[in-house]
Image 1 (cartoon, rainbow, N blue to C red):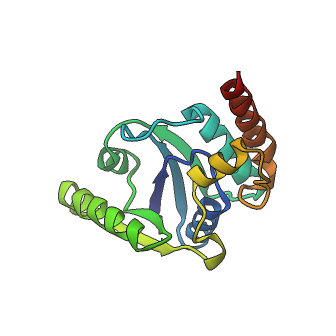
Image 2: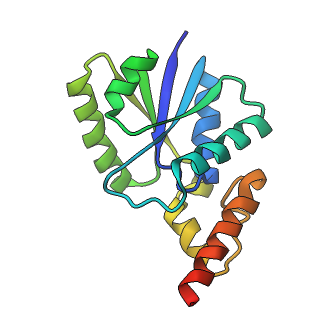
Length: 168
């Protein structure tokens, strides 16, 4: 059974993330979506909130071979712990490739048997990122086309609450 890990911050999950998860689900036996911590980022949603949103999307779409987990350690240690053979990452642009390629080489150096597989994003999601969703949502813009429908209410509500707190 081929297990892959699809790590990211998913802050929040977008339709671009979902596209990569669904495509990986169609190819591999087991996909673990890993809500990973990144000390370089200050997350808007908590790890439990992000995990719950992704689990809701996975249930809604009946992706039976997809699991969701959280971890705040080194990715290659997690890969070993769950017996995964590869990391799946989505790429939007050349700038993503440079960073992800560096990470892939580092992970491969730390764990030579682990490969990184890159999925290019669909053209309709090339511009989409969690930070864009947060920015548009905080300013009252319509984010329905950017996020999975079933988690839109949670994302929208938290972004609105955040923008109201900033006004005070």
